[in-house]
Every structure is written in C-alpha cells, then in structure tokens.
Length: 154
Image (cartoon, rainbow, N blue to C red; front, side):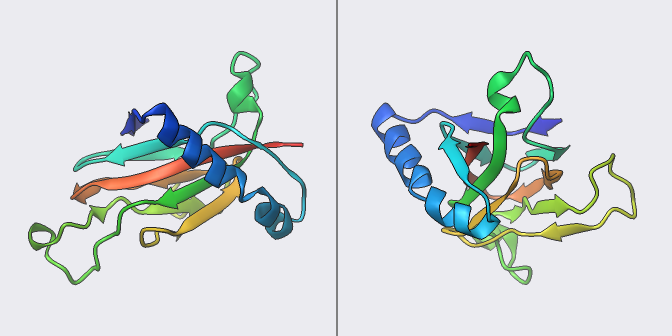
C-alpha cells in the first residue's frame, strides 16, 4: 500500500506544527463552506527514491480505528520543492516523481480513472475531503517531504 516513513520530531516542533495547522481552521471552514473541527496531530512524511503511497482515502468506517474514522479533511503541506520536468535529477537537489494525485472516482483505480496532479512547491498547502481517493506516485530522485494533518468534523 505504501512505502514511506513518518519522521520523528521533537515535542516542541510537533506542538508548533500542530498550532500552525490548527490556525488554518477558519480559512478551511470558509473554503469548504462547513465547520472544520479539531486538528489531529500532524505527521511529517519522508519519501526517498522508490517511495510511494498507492491510491487510498484517509478515513474508514471501521469502528476499531476511531481516530481515522473521525477524519473529515486532509491537509498536505509541501516542505520540499519538486523538480522542474526539464531538470536533470542527478544535478538537482529537489525531488523527482512523488506527484500527489487526487482521483475523481471513489471506486478502485482503473486505467481510465481521471486524476488531478496537485503537487506544489514548498509552502503549498492542499486540502481535500478525507474521503477523496488520492495517491503519491513513486519518487524517482531526491527526497519529498510533506507535513500532513487531518481535521475532524464538528
């Protein structure tokens, strides 16, 4: 399903990052037109060459996983820059591959499945409903870093 690592952060850094994501609730409420609840603790995900995350959603109906079941919105903050398509991966410190794709359909992936690439430069925040099927394509060079947080419904 996935080949990525969650990075361990000092408690002070986790608290600072959680505060930054929590501060976005008002803007996300306005954007999505519905109240946004509490922010679950964020993760920093590191993707090196060969790392990926197959199509999935960030929520479940499984009562054995109440924290995942409570997720309503996903927010991804890009911390590293993707490589420009014309650059040579061997000469660039940015990452190649590792595209964040949001899928239009909710069922299993097919060859005709439409997906939108929402990958952005460092500092870009992408938010979407936790029920949205999405994936990260394999990283082919460099290191892709993102901060990911999930908001509950109110």
